[in-house]
Every structure is written in C-alpha cells, then in structure tokens.
Picture 1: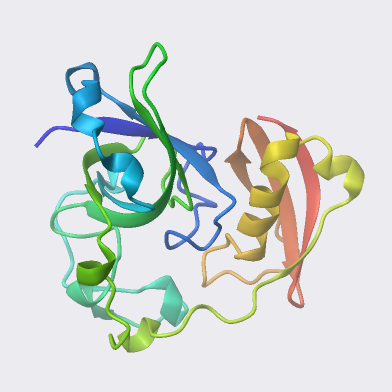
Picture 2 (picture 1 turned 45 degrees about the vertical axis):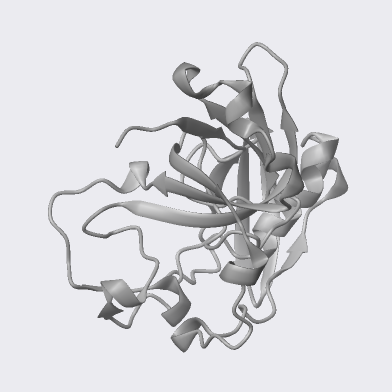
Length: 223
C-alpha cells in the first residue's frame, strides 16, 4: 500500500491530538491528495455523505516488533489489556481508523480536490491510505457494547485561559483549542500539578498546568 493523501491539521506532533475522532468537532483539517489521485471524477457523489472513514498510518509510532498487551489511556495507562481489544497505535500493522464529518469537497485549487473535515484525531502530515463513505444503515450499531470504553469520557477539565493569551490564537481556532485542552492532553499516568506541559497547535506553542481538575494556560506563543 501507498498513501493516497496526507492530512493537514493544526497538530505539529501527536501530543495534544484527541484520543478519538469526533471528541472535538470544532477541529478542522484538510485531506490533501497525492497528484495521481486528484482526478475530480474520483470524488463524484461524495457530497451526498455527511461523514467519512479515514484509514491511515500511525506514522509517528513506527517501531520494531510488537507487544500482545498494551496500556490504553482509557484505563489510566496502568492496566494491560490485549492489543486487539484496543485502538492503541502500537500494533503489528500501524493502521488507524477515524470517522470524521465531511464539511465540503473543494474541487478547484492548485492542489486539486481536497476534503475539508472536522473532528479529526490526526497529527499534521499523517499518511492517508484510503477514504470511504460512512454508511449509516451498515456502520451504525446502536445496540453495540463498548467493553471498557463503553461510555464517553466523563467530565473534562475546566480550562482557564487569560483573554490576552487566547487572543494570540487565530480567531477561527480558539474554540477548537479550548476543546482540545478540556479533553486533557496529558499522558494519563502523569498528574504533577507543578509540571508545565506544551504542544504545538496552529503554528503556536501552547503551555499549561493542571491542578485539581483545572487546566490553566500559562503561555501561547509563536511556535
């Protein structure tokens, strides 16, 4: 297999990326296709679908070998379960699957047809192996049981960001940034209230601390 596209998102690395697609709907990303796959007729009919499946490669998690058990963040990072019972990036084949909302198809432009999507959980530059439409009658299973991940994560952090810092982020990215922070980007096994964490977002470096369920942004600066 070879990538047919790459995603253009606001995350310069995997740190800060939501742990599942759709958790932060305000996030916008662009699927940019490689030149051989930019034929407009390849996208005919896509505008009739509200959501798409992106099949992609965990390109920032390549490693030799694999482990039959992993420690998923959902279980606090301190309990091991079988790799095939998780969506861990550390797999025999590093393939990811994400359901995203299709905002629109842009057929014109120097890069040919591109897809504007929302809710993506991918770092910038992630290779896309395939794109398929989400078909509700086949893909939606209301009776499905989700095991240890059966319910959406509870609560979320309260985010405190001084207005003068938030103003440094592009206006059309602020809602998404606050949503990402509320999801708690920290590794699940780290809970040091004095530690300053940071990640790249929309060309900025965002730094924060977390204590007692409150995330406080300490700096937003050019990355």
